[in-house]
Length: 103
Image (cartoon, rainbow, N blue to C red; front, side, top):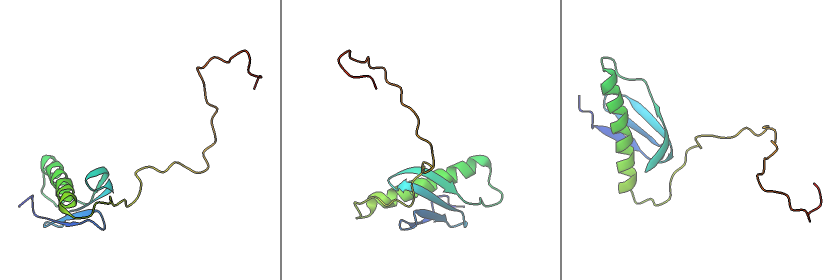
């Protein structure tokens, strides 16, 4: 199996190997923030699976660097803080000046 035979789609931020294995990334394709591998082909060792993921990410990165698009494509952020998260009090290490009124 040729591990370097990839088809890259920058619009969907994904790459598909000739074996049918597909992976998707998040963030900038030149510097991904997360990788989501699909189902691996049967018969691959764990080392071959890791190598397949690494080569897939490299294929996306290489295609992004070779494309003429200068604007990074962002599919979705890697982390979205919850909207209903309560506000926490902040701790300050600054000393209060004597001239300022008490808070």
